[in-house]
Length: 443
Image 1 (tube, rainbow, N blue to C red):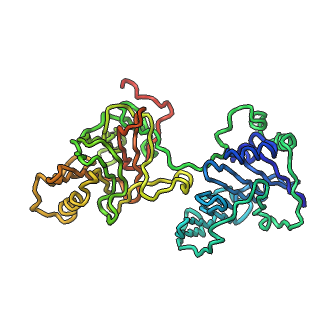
Image 2: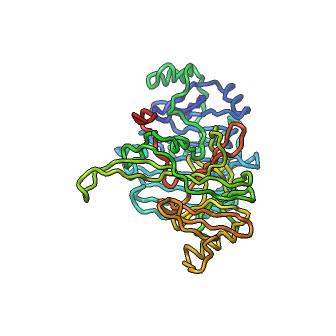
Image 3: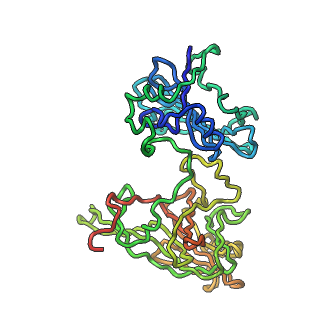
């Protein structure tokens, strides 16, 4: 059997065809330069590819997608190039079993098995026999070293990993497809722009995995901006509420959940100039019909909390990382942040973390009535719920409520000069700007 191999700059995930086919020489050059490219394996008479290999060495990434005869992805493998240039970590794999040809690709009811592996020996195997709608069974996978790691082949020496899946034999012949032939093959499925790369790559083209991105954080503190949280169709941002200040004399800000084990200190720390900074809440107003009152009522919700470090606008936003985080291991939209088991986070001076946390526990957890009012303060009518103060250093902790347990990303805003100007935590998910993207009429 002849297996045809062609190269392209990208792969269109929607049309399942290559974008901007390239020669083997150009693919080799892109491989050496670390630029993204794809390798597509096909057989004559079959519309769907056998598999697509996705390569971007500059992103430490090699991916593999295996397709069935209906053009559905049945297996995804995400491999990462780390410190050893000769081998790849099998970081993340998803195997889908479609019960029949009528089930759509990525159907929520499709049974799947997901395996996550880490270089330190950790791992997680998740089985969903009824897909996302059914129960999830999680175990620790038992992997040998050769199952966790794969040798890094030289360019052009990649094995066809899906050969056994498709029933191919070792006698299969690999035939390199030239770009002109590949363009003709795909011309019935794609436009001329997509086929020859004369325009920008479609938004549906594959790109290397990226960690979670910040979204329109600035707009959440801009009165008049209209957003939706998915539940309320229209919400209007109102003036941010200021809830006092926070003193950080040590110059190291802690952002963490104060309600879990902290033997290793706070989850997130951000260096800031020693000082006293304003605490704010992003708020949005929305109207809805209240069945109890039988009329339309207006309500205001908090979307995010912010420590305002400087007056300059944020030119960029970045996700703060925990100690030991390695962005080379992050899968698409993965987050890092602080954990909470009690729907609570806090901003605090990391230099006085232990005494501030002890005051938090005495006041909120133990309800100690003898706490010095100069060291502990309850805050009412705010997403910020309390403040503690270390009298020896003047350092403070301000705890705030979130809308649930779990992990919450910490977003750090920097001005053009690269200095920290704001630290933000969304207390729920990131709202979306309404299609007009602007401000409400009359604002």
